[in-house]
Image (cartoon, rainbow, N blue to C red; front, side):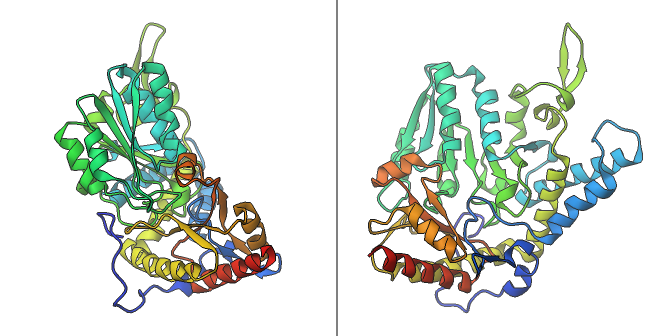
Length: 420
């Protein structure tokens, strides 16, 4: 996928050049057996794995530099602050934000979306509307429902088709003078659909409607340029992109962050406190109350360094080729029903096999060393739309290979024989 969210066409070209063997050597967790079989980890949409370079960076911080940031005059505090703020600059550069003041560290995508809902939404009213799509993760549904309960605002839902694609014209038609915010997934976690945010955002811009993009499933797989997209907010999580858990990012245009009140109180978000009045800190610290996840930010910075070394263009091309191979191999199995067949997709394959429950599939595959995700994937409205309780989902990363896919297919063949 490129910066506009399109997957490169690799059908008429050689397989992308990416040293998969060398890359797999960087991930200690991949080199183990599960139930006597090699591990084929295909649950990357839930959480990716960490290379040794990220683990080493976190260990180095705890062994040599640990201290609180921004508050100390001693050497360790200076080192910790430099590493922490250095990670912020790495994030800024990675997504091409204008300034580090637009990079807010959060606990993850969910926390980032809740931040916007709580802060930007404080002056919403019963006359206002929030527009989302039918394919959103619960984290991009529930915060807006909570806001609607609080303010009386109305939640509008743009429809999708049977391929799992956003009906863009219908979505644009739902925008009105009442729309206060559009919140949309860049890539669906349950379907792999790449949404046409590069077409939706300008339409919202013409109406002066801010757009929040849930980038959790896009950021690991493609180059993201927030200035090129011209989105107002972009939220993502470290643990989807080879970084540690418990740390994420909210990118917000400075013009929006400056007018938003603090999300939480205490710690770094203040300049001065008295019983009569509190003065809030400058951006981005106004939204970072308390001692931050310093090690998490440093680990995220190391993950960005690692991804940059490989190159996001190389990752996108490699994963597109692997997705084509996996989709073809799985589709040939008897009784397979693919859920989500959008023309533009990221490395997610959701499927069911006849009447076999997804959890049973997952259990059989685990006994063959294959890790996939089963269930509703925190996207219950998607499952309701397709009339199913859940799916089996195999999700890809650049450290996966065709052997992982072959192992998945052989496991599925075994499951089909068992349940015939």
